[in-house]
Image (cartoon, one colour):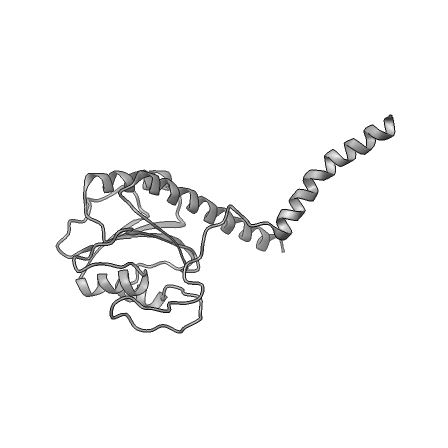
Length: 205
């Protein structure tokens, strides 16, 4: 009887370990977020230049520095906000996002508007960077760099873009929908957790 109990106890303890090892080896990680354009940009939007095919797409740092006048920071996670009509819902959702990450120095929210658009008043969020750009630069940033399909009025359907520390696009979001802000927060949490885990592993070596 005691032998039977011992066997059952052993199986009870070892079963979760076997499941974990199986999922690590063969299972799909449900807590991961996509990397966009891993096969490169095969069909550039509009008049954007043809990029090297079959190469994973990364935002061009030199282009960002040129357009944003040196304000783009490498090795930082960024959320780009552009192509959106300014209204109360947009502002409220952006403030919801900013309030959550106001104490993080490794995350930037970069809002980009046309020259005649109103830039929000001075903010208590130092990570919120805001720019007025000529149409040519805004179109270049939106279509050719962030791969947003801006229309002739410089508007987009999902004008929030998550970019990781390696300048890879990780998500597109509708800034007018609070559930999309929640999705952004969740995916950003996953991204930062993985980033922190990699840093810890690097420090331990």
